Length: 84
Image (cartoon, rainbow, N blue to C red; front, side, top):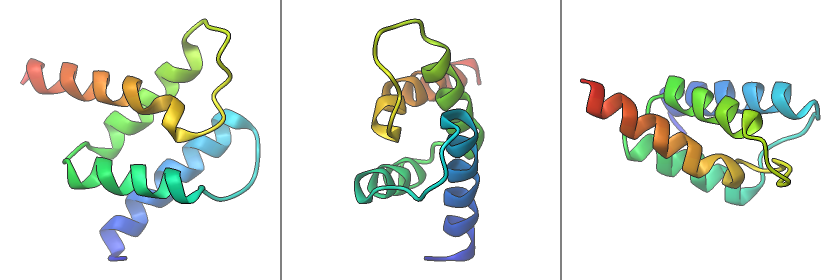
């Protein structure tokens, strides 16, 4: 993993930990998702905003993995891309 990928992943992990209030590392599924976001050109800022949006959604679904944040991340990315 290159230094850019490591920084990208570290920022996302730190933010996700803050939102969940739990220590730990990313699951293999979450790591693949982070890699996919980066490969698709989704900025770290979009991911962090998407995580925040997933946690602010009022629903019965408790966010326990980044997979729960994927649609919110992609929505933020789409909105950002359309605004440019």
